[in-house]
Amino acid sequence: MIFGNRAAAYLGAGAAGLVAAGAFAAPALADNTADLAIKATGTTIAVGAPGKFASVSLLNKSAVDAKGVLVGLDISKLDTKLVDINESGCNTREDGWILCGIEGDTIGAGEDVDWAFPLTRKGDGTGPAGSISALILHEGDDPDESNNLVTVDVKVEGTGPDLSVVADDVRKAVKVEGGSITQVGDLQAGNTGQLIYSAFNQGDQATTGLRISVKLPKGATFAEKEEDCTYNDAMTALTCQYEAVLVPASQDKDGDKLYAGARFYNLVKVDAGVKPSSLTGGEVTIDPLWKEGAAASNATKATTSNLPQNAEGVSDKDVDASDNTDDFSVIVAGKGGTGGGDNGGGLPVTGPQAGLIGGIGGAVLLAGGVMFMVARRRRIVLVTPGDEKSAV
Image 1 (cartoon, rainbow, N blue to C red):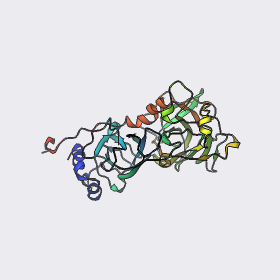
Image 2: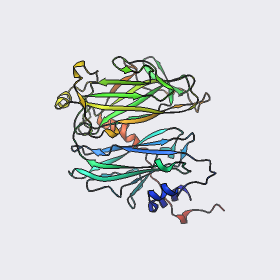
Image 3: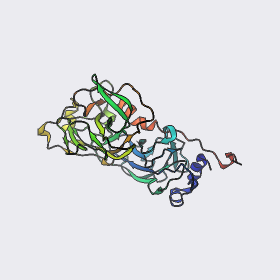
Image 4: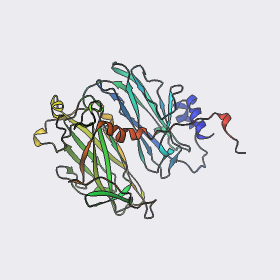
């Protein structure tokens, strides 16, 4: 059965049958075995927000690439009169399922791919809106199907900031020269790479500030310390606070000085003795700092300076804290690498090399921060069993 038919058959098989029986597994001797896993978060929408992007992490836990990757969304238990999904870029829903591909149809060995789907409010109702199940498949055999399916509750409730975080895998070496950071090839042992992550506010109130925590995977350390941030002795974890007013995405207008999101980076060094591999276990968490009435009054200045000491009383409040954390991997290549060379560009160095590097307007953020994940979705062309050609 070709992969298109695996997906088509799955529409009628149901998740339980697939996970329990391995209905579409490749032959035991196939060389395309890959262990995939999926996590879904961010399915609570603030009462005053028009919707949000739910976050999905697609992880390849294997040392080989997973090809022909397909993501399925089971919305049969979603109350679409209250919340619905925009399936643009995917197959039209059928029997309660939406089937989507990803860019390149491949998740590389050890990669953690961020993906998202848009949830849209219908009317002004609030409360529970049912659930969504998300499934990941690929064209080969998966030795552990227990983590291929995840179910999350969808609801409309709460008011306040709602931060979502996207952290990219670190896979390129960089050099700092002439006031800029430039990619110089694949990341190898002893090299320095750049961890880039973004936070955006999908709630209905602005933040007063941000608290950032980063934990690096074993085999990597921060390349240097940033003033006003705290680090553990091993230089593998940090915590920073910033006065960064992030307004709700729905309030961010082009041309003003208010921003719905911000982008950050840290320079990360791979230990000299690390062998070519995917270093997993990296984690970025960004929580909003919020005080009743303070965010609204501070939204006019939208500063990105560090929080003053007298702001210690501000506490965190997030409508949906499930998507405040995102995992990342550090991909270490062998000495031969898979390419390299100067890729040009990069982020400017303006002051500390670790920390806040600028605000992102709502329209730009959604185009470059969240929508890039949606753009990875690819329409799947399904075929019926009668369309298959015999290999004999």
